[in-house]
Structure formats: structure tokens, C-alpha cells
Length: 237
Image 1: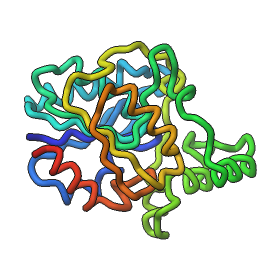
Image 2 (image 1 turned 90 degrees about the horizontal axis):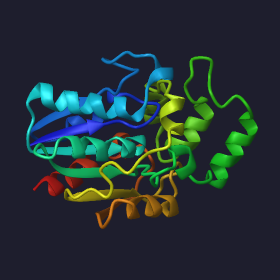
Image 3 (image 1 turned 90 degrees about the vertical axis):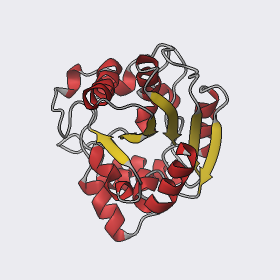
């Protein structure tokens, strides 16, 4: 059994670093194209490129009995990977993932900001992105870091990277949805990026997944790595 970890938007594989030490067995944290070990021009990337990168990682390593774990934006990647690797992916775990309906995009599916986040966004105005293309640190703090201490916040903001606008605006098909593989959706109860109502809407598109609640904000792998690891171990059997 191998845990294959797929990061969300605006991050790379480093976001999993604090979780990895709590996981037993083999772990592969993937860098999606456009960052880390897979440099590529962001403006040319689509969801198919994200799927292909994870498939390539699994096939090149000869992995079987894979527990495929995705966070946030990875909800658009996991179903395609599972469809492409029917004999290798044993279980899927969606951690507060965005799962748009067929014919819609991630931007369509996100819903509205929480009041606190909306206030920060209004104060920032048009400067939501920095010159390097990452989220403004104040907005990132509001969306991702509402349950963090100062050290965790600094770490999170420090590992952020630019994201492909094409990926988040791409209208998706229905490949792999609903998935027929054993599937769990981990709801993050203090998530200020995807509200509980939005998460509930997302998980219904996966058919009838198991649901596990975790009292954490959006970046649970940073704030509660031991608890998230225990959840993953239990799901992996």
C-alpha cells in the first residue's frame, strides 16, 4: 500500500511535509506541473496535464494498491487518475476538495467567501495576487490559516506558488464521476476557504462517499497532521 498525495491549488508537494512523518508505509507526494520537480508554463496547463502527471508518477514507480489522497483543487484531478489506473488505485480520499459538476469549472463551484474572508478581499481590492502570482498573504491567511499559530502561518504563506488560471477556469467533463472506487470525503469543519455547505455540495457529486469530519481549517495537513494521518491509516485498513 502506498499513499499518493496530491496537493491543492497555489501549493506544491511541500504542503504535505508535516503529514508524511506520521504516515506508515510508502508515501509519494506529487508535484503537479508548473512547480517543484515539474516546471512548465502555467498558462498552457490544463486538468489533463495534472491527471497525466499523477498517472506518470504512479506508473513510473510501479505502484499498486494506491491510496490516492487529494486536497482542495486536487478534486479535479483524482477522478481522472482513478479512471486511468483502474488496477492500481484502491481507494480515494478527498480532503475538503472542490468537485465541480460536469460542464462547470472550479471557479463556478467555489461559492462565496466567508464574511471574514470577504472583508479581507474587499480591503485588498484588485491586489488579490502578488507580483509573483501568489495569493496576497492577507487573503491567504484568511482563507487557509484561520486555525494556525504564527509559525504555521509563516510556513504556509512561505510555500505558496502561482497557480494556473486556465485550470481553475476550465469547464470539466464527467470523467471518473461518480467514481466506483471506495471513496471518502474528509470535511474540514473550520474551513474558511470551502464552507461546510460548499463541501456538502461537492461530496454529493462523488456518489455516496463515506464522510469523515475533522475539526480543522483548510490546511489540516499542516495544523493537524497526526490526526489526519490517523484518519488515512484507518481508511487504508
